[in-house]
Length: 281
Ligand code: C2E
Ligand code: MG
Ligand code: MG
Ligand code: MG
Image 1 (spheres, rainbow, N blue to C red):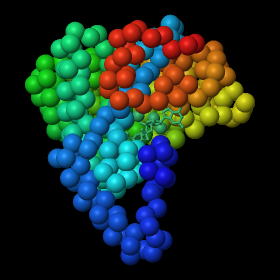
Image 2: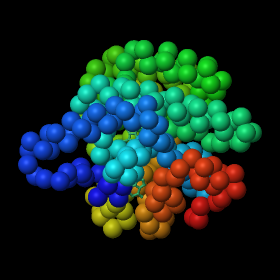
Image 3: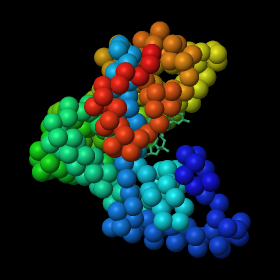
């Protein structure tokens, strides 16, 4: 099942618990080595503007080129990393790699739209703004080129501290997107306290539009509220034209999903932007 894009954990060789624990332990060791061995890679999934079909951004999604299992998606290893401090090392790698990629694009004179990275809640400590600032400085890139995607789980943990950190990031000029919106446990009141610039409608609601009345109601409520709060609205996991038409009519700003493009290796994504490809609306 490796590399199929499904998030189900890999079933290793035997259902025997002992053996599973051993394999998990082995995978953890391998993940530790993955960074040093250059096995990690960022894929890029375009975000498409509903105004003109142009690519106006991308999300960086982590992949692990595993020597035996092939290309692994995060569902296979992020939960494992979250259970250990490995998530911090992975997170640092992703941040630095995204900055390096942005710098590379700029050095070739390409006018690439902003790149968003996913942050784990555990990465979010009071040193994060300084670390990001140093990275931006050392790669000589401006904050407008980098965006951060966070989830609601982060906001409920320690709201006051998190608000403080997020305000620092926002003051630096970084866009902050609330990912998988509507699936977590945060209250709507949080939305006005946190400097969120973008709301991403979770795929679990996008799946049901336009045929499931409940999903339509939720999508519509998110768009209406986000607009009032002057947030940009992105829908994720758009797979067909019916969904696209519905979300456009609701007033979403951007769409992301297999209908337009899978997450791509950097060179392929770069070519789409270079050729100014308009993804069909
Ligand atoms: P996410 O941030 O919500 O990312 C969207 C996920 O949906 C990605 O899965 C993407 O490949 C998938 N997707 C995009 N369009 C479609 C579609 O039309 N249909 C379907 N069925 N799926 C679609 P992926 O790459 O497997 O990543 C899963 C999750 O892993 C991400 O969800 C994010 O929470 C996490 N993740 C990915 N990269 C990183 C990272 O660098 N750091 C951290 N902490 N988490 C990451
Ligand atoms: Mg995301
Ligand atoms: Mg998401
Ligand atoms: Mg999601």
